[in-house]
Image 1 (cartoon, helix red, strand yellow):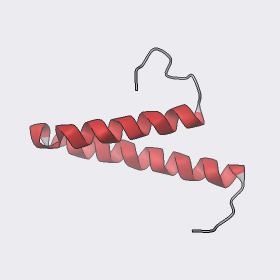
Image 2 (cartoon, helix red, strand yellow; image 1 turned 180 degrees about the vertical axis):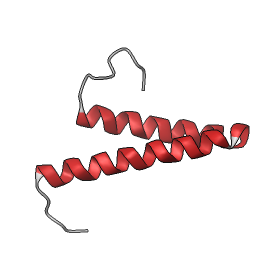
Image 3 (cartoon, helix red, strand yellow; image 1 turned 45 degrees about the vertical axis):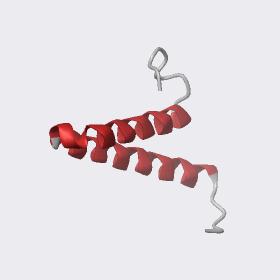
Image 4 (tube, helix red, strand yellow; image 1 turned 180 degrees about the horizontal axis):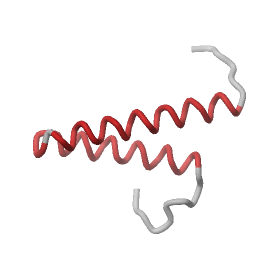
Length: 63
């Protein structure tokens, strides 16, 4: 992957990834106990991507 992208495209890709992580989190949470660990992983990924997009927006929330 040698694509050179500008900051706007990078932001769009991060936002798309965050949306996908949120969708995956919801899907795994619906599976109950069997999906709890994966749901937590996708929640964490979403929070990290949110911190990249909006630094400090989640102040007080541990990653």
